[in-house]
Image (cartoon, rainbow, N blue to C red):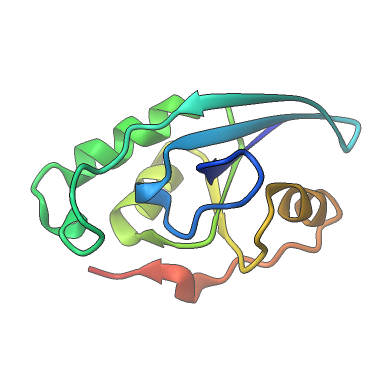
Amino acid sequence: MKIAAVTDDGVTIHAHFGQALYFEVLTVEHEQVVARERRAKPSHQHGAHEEHHHSGMDTHAHGMAAVIADCEVLLARGMGQPAFQALQSAGIQAILTEKQTIDDAAQAYLKGELSHRAERVHHH
């Protein structure tokens, strides 16, 4: 299975899905991470508050989901409702967490201990 996380540095989970530069994709076999890959992520070219108001958001969110179409799970710390829905539509489980690092969140997920924090989905 593959787990993606939004990141700028490959270590920490970015605070907002839309503003992160990369996806860090972890390949997991037998509950162990066996490979890591960094993929460029389409990003918003707007300020933090402007991004939610442009008309291409739904198409843009689906484009971001397409980059990780081979992943089952996406780890983030926050995201807008359109992105959350686009990921669900693509069959990717978005888990919004308070955990700071990709490795901590991935290990918690693999142990069945990572909770989705629904209040971290920003409604627009």
